[in-house]
Length: 413
Image (cartoon, rainbow, N blue to C red; front, side, top):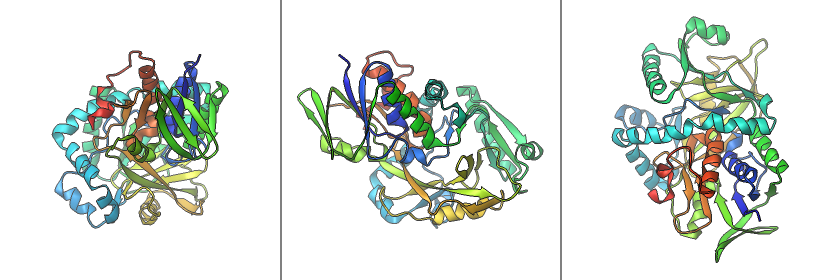
């Protein structure tokens, strides 16, 4: 008899776990309060980031910290109440960003990133989602030669250590690819490996439809309880109760609070983000995904229009939206590309689920047999969901994993 499994959370991570388990013969129920891919996975930049072998550290140099304090930067904003609320995890994040600890974290993190394309590939094919995916990389654009040169050096190291492929574009080569770019941009790195997705939420939904086509059960309902009864698990919603042999916690930004009634206190915090879609001015076309690296926002040619995504906002998960960061990014973006009118009535707001050592938790819960964890992917849940699904399914089947999973154990906290 197939093992009964309930996966909690239908973002990229949860859907990918459910897809892998269902494909391997488990009988899986996937539960979320919203349709698949409508929370954090919906609003990201839509890049499967094979080049992102280094997680984002907390700034440690005094010059950067002082520049953040006035709270006017585009790449990072904060609210004092949110900082106080997450003071302990943020202090731990700052600690783990020291050069000594970060140097150890990078190869562990990179081991996950290196799996991302080969894990997404079969899911894209099985779900018939090829029309959403481009395999032409993306452009990281620069304004000053010094910062571009520094980034090239980092890219060369990433190529040597982790097989990351890129090319360097001067102004002339860049304008061949993006003729409408403003004259403040002097060059770019063209990351060649990553795949870009014109509708991130649509890709998650396609994966979920493939999961259902294999016989998986998709339930849209508010989860009201998760309890262990002897060696079985019971998940309750407002409408139904599900009994299972195993439960997977993949609730992204909400995972930490759901783990507390079970006696786990993970140091979770969130980096919130916003997006808005725009028309382009007559005759203008955005050809590539563009990150304005020195300012800290991204423009992407999505199906819904040109999507502008912001950097990070440090605040409480459920605090009201504050569109000032988006407005600041838009003002800068209009100086380098001819954006047209806004297409959305209000900015979309989401939250990236983070842990202080910049690595997700993937594996068994330390004290509850049959409870499996997959959360805390920070900026890269969209990139890492399928790899996480593959690795966690291997662990659940007690098979060898493609990489060492020790760095992602839950009991490290």
